[in-house]
Length: 69
Image (cartoon, rainbow, N blue to C red; front, side, top):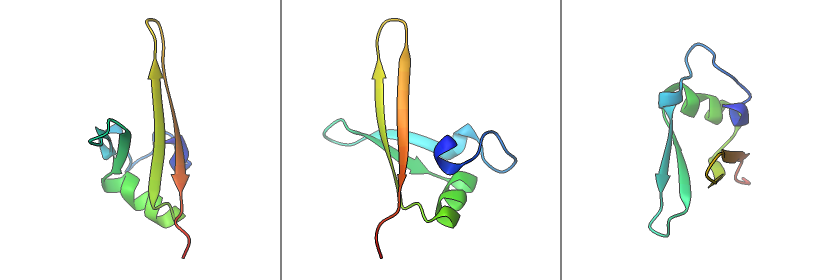
């Protein structure tokens, strides 16, 4: 949600953001609903994400990418 410049706001929920795995195991972000609309309005075409974890902690970092025209 921070990549979209929002927190919890009306029209965007956690259910709008889906994390899938590519065949190689790389995490992929798929945006739906309000999150997809917000990304489009910001010119974000893709979201790159890295996910890491250990026994006590988990972390993720996401970056919104605009493809050059």
